[in-house]
Amino acid sequence: MKTINVDINNVLQGVSRAEIDNLAPKAAEGLDKVLNGTGEGNDFLGWVNLPSETTEALLDEIVECADALRASCDTVVAIGIGGSYLGAKAVIEALSDSFAPYRPAAEGNPKVIFAGQNIGEDYLYELQDYLSDKRFGIIVISKSGTTTEPAIAFRLLKEQLERQMGVDEARKRIVAITDARRGALRTLATEEGYKTFVIADNVGGRFSVLTPVGLLPIAVAGFDIRALIDGAVEMEKLTSTADDSNPAYLYAATRNALYAAGKKIEILVNYNPKLHYFGEWWKQLYGESEGKDHKGIFPAAVDFSTDLHSMGQWIQDGERTIFETVISVMEQQHEKLIPSDEANLDGLNYIAGKHVDEVNKMAELGTRIAHVDGGVPNILITLPALREKYLGQLIYFFEKACGISGYMIDVNPFNQPGVEDYKRNMFALLAKPGYEKETEAIRARL
Image 1 (spheres, rainbow, N blue to C red):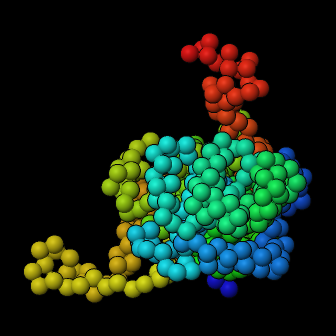
Image 2 (tube, one colour):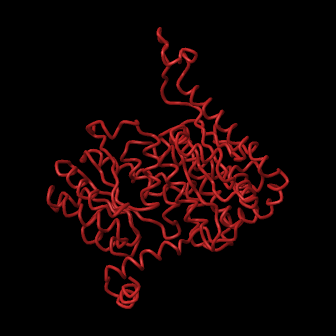
Image 3 (cartoon, rainbow, N blue to C red):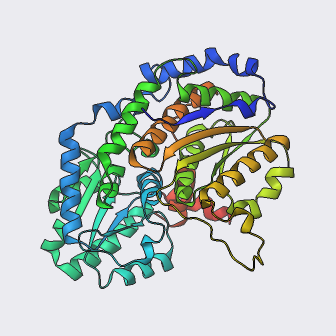
């Protein structure tokens, strides 16, 4: 069985193997809390056994719904914010043709685009203008239905869809992924008769990509959600023991040993541009899970070799408070050889006949060596290929390691109290009913 692999050999200049091993009891305790629900936030551990508990009946239902949208729409808008869009976006981008956004939608293969992840007026205007001549559908994702950013987008797009298609047809093209029993979106979905899927109460947004939240948009985009779940099931089995055979345990222990040694910033590095949004998903997962009580490694992400020509200087020679976690993709989907040129004005004939990926791999290896020599420890994660199965493994690996790692620094990895602060201020500034005292107080500060 091919799986992802974690290699920590290039962190041993920053921390010793003994320092990593000294954290074994803490890592084992964190793993136990994740597996047995004995830590803070244990009411949000529904993701732990989610892959193995996902039923064929649910997958069939998701695929059937996706097929209906694929048959009736040339564009499907997935509305959500944070974990309600980043996971799906990450997987779709990783598996798609790099230039798919510039190609016309093929019959039965709609574009999946996103809304509700910002409050950009120009973005929403231009989105509605783009959809004005499209046969579009909507997947709206929200437990409550009242989160400001997706609620604004849904209000606009629902009205547009009903205007363009008629109310009855619009009902058939709207799918709500929401709470099982309560909330504004659940009430509306019941009243309108929308097709619905449930966001389980015990699965937080940033851990929801392997639920209908992520699986439905991924299936609408034409990808194999069964293979994605199969990969996650494999990783669920591999991450149950408190030893180095468990890659999530090893990664969590290593990054926390680096953190204890003063490495406060982790940079997730990819050498495949299709993984850009995977880095965005990973940033939310770790930033929202660990950044509490004035603790936590700061998560950043870069795309190499692109960012070697911008961030590369700082990483090589800047403040030594960083370490890198590099995702290396072993197999490419296509082959492209570098041609020879008789004039050789660019001096590239020395690599003529080589695969482009061979050059990329040497850029990767050369950079890792340079950064390690420059005092930047490197964790290497190898991914066999950008396919659904291995992405399922990688997603679950990072989720499990995140839970362990959060418990290792004694925070609740599954809440996000700081996220609510901006919302309270925004509601006060907008004079939302019920926030009269807050409105008065915040206006006095301006």
